[in-house]
Length: 423
Ligand code: PSV
Ligand code: MN
Image 1 (cartoon, rainbow, N blue to C red):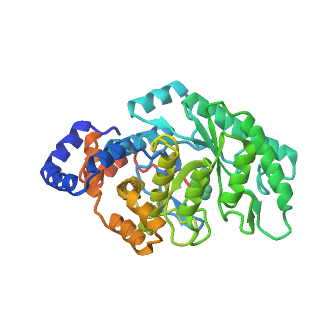
Image 2 (cartoon, protein in one colour):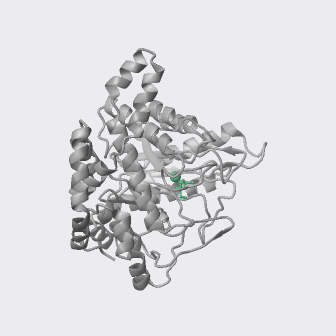
Image 3 (cartoon, protein in one colour):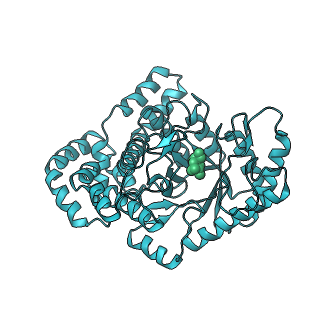
């Protein structure tokens, strides 16, 4: 289903007077409102192909209807999101789930939907049908060279798919690790993984990046071979300048100070980017900003501070992606909420009075520092985000439009009871 831009325009007209009144107020109230809106209008967050169907847990999955059945359908869903919010102009593919049959046709489809291909993702955390060797005891870390080679070959194949699509990065997330004490020699597992990553790195085109994603636990519950940002950074540093550490918000032990991790990775020039989600307990993959919106702002505050310190382009120099699972919500509605939360956190970070914060820090004025952050967080920036959408020709109120126009009902009509294969 392709959205008619005129429909969006028509819908916006009804809300325009009220929006203009608010925008007139905020552009006087917030000194750098115009500059913030311009940055917001350029910002994009990629949507992973695996987030477009209803997710589940190991206990079950309650699928919705009208879900995408093919790569083309998935791209159309991301195209819908992008038409609605003007900030979802990229899709991230997972191989082998999303192998295109006709690259040219897929590229044309992407261009017609105004989409780019974000990082491609390999999968050595599941055995695929017909695969000769099993990943039950790991992939790049495996004690058997042949298993490692199979996993290396898969990653190189993923890079080759990505090259044909115009992607510029591969994300390697490994479920490798151990479930019980004594199962692994940690040092050997690290060395094997490093050598395997080196072989993948050697196959990287010169304008590509390799993102090493870490995760504290699951599916292995005693040790993970890329378990935290320290381990990931060790690999990235040993691999070379094209390797970076990828932060997934749900991949930390409880209460980790993610904003500090981000700050230091940026300082080292080794932050790859983000997988956004939210959590209460572990890797819950909940809607971004649904549980800890203040933490999300604090993270964005460090991101903007760190990127500006290095003169980085906010939109292009880091990889931004949502990595969430939608078990009880319509995935498209959930993704609209996630992107909105990210845009609000980014707007708050841009609004932060950095000079005043620096002064407070230099004077050990803890109270002033907290006031600056919390006053910023309590400022309503929703109108700025809506103004950015309006300038991009997107919907002033994406979720309201989606419901009013009965987009899901339309998808069900088009696709029937189709249920996406998902995690
Ligand atoms: C693992 O939990 C993860 O966050 C990695 O990014 C995977 O590629 C993704 O989820 C989908 O399995
Ligand atoms: Mn992830």
